Length: 314
Image (cartoon, rainbow, N blue to C red; front, side):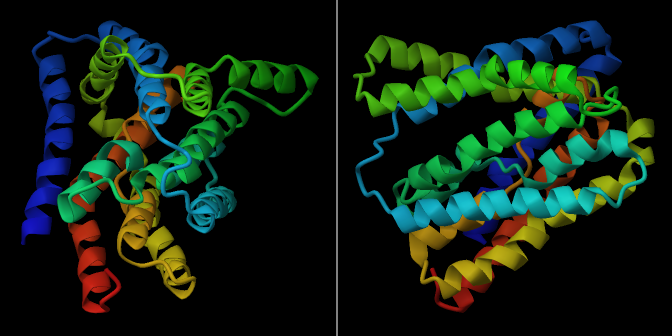
């Protein structure tokens, strides 16, 4: 029951922020133009700063576990490949990019650490899980959303050049690279810079969620109900069903297994919506998946925890 209450405390406020954005739109306090600009701002400033701050403070050498990091990386990569292959089944090719990203990309960095701290009293293996998966999450999201832009007719030299430039100049990628370099060079993080970056990064989630809610169109969402439900099932149940047994067979237990569970089975991050909107996608499917996975992840994650505890794996 404690885990259920904690999960609800972590996910319900996120869902309510989206509802709040929708409510503000109904009151005409937020219009579409304002919500669009707020999305662009979150994409260019708070989100990259948040990723930089998270990675810059990770100590790569402390408690390093190469096997665990490699598993997180390979599991994430295979998840993306499997989802990409599954996306070929949709007749509407304009939703492929959104479907792929929303199906694999978790709120691992934001909610994962808090969830693990609540159970073990420390971050456990979360930083290593972040190293193995989160940079790949973001880099592959940029690549996927670039290659599957709805208006693209095919891949020629101009498209490839535009895609490459878009990847290299993407604020998310720049934030990740800056964080890695800062950490690798062991540059001290001054308290003033740390607090400033943390404060700026903290605005990413609430602003992004309210903008998402303000732009949410229930009629368009109902038109994409089937892919949204499918992506939600893959995100919360499908990937865990495939990769958790493999993790157990490889000998991962306790904090390691919990971090893998968070990586695979936590709700889709709001950053998916921010990125999809700012990279030429409609965003309706993504916002639907974020809402559904946020609403149901507290129950599915608790169910996975119950199974792992029952089997005495954590």
